[in-house]
Amino acid sequence: MLIRVDPASETPIFAQVAASVRADAAAGRLRAGDKLPSAREVAASLGVNLHTVLRAYQSLREEGLVDMRRGRGAVVTEAVEPLAQLHHDVATLVARAKELGLSPDTLAALVKETYR
Image (cartoon, rainbow, N blue to C red; front, side, top):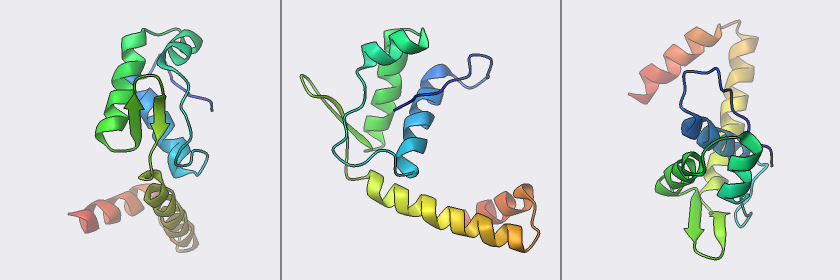
């Protein structure tokens, strides 16, 4: 698993780490039961503070995507399965929007309006 961050981004690093894990889960690259790299490993590889990674993992835990247990580390939960299905549905929607010639902004506006 490759966690990606952009140090130049205005988005906090912990949010980028969580978003990277979330994206891998949505794309099906992470499955229920998969173990995430230890927070220490991630922090060392990214050159960030350990607490930054722990905050990201805690955020994922609060969303129900990760279960954290002492001695086991962070493990992906069953909650990723519907997320992966939703990702597939969104990909289908994007493909249809492209067929219709809709811009990404128009599609985003339609989704936001429908979500309300």
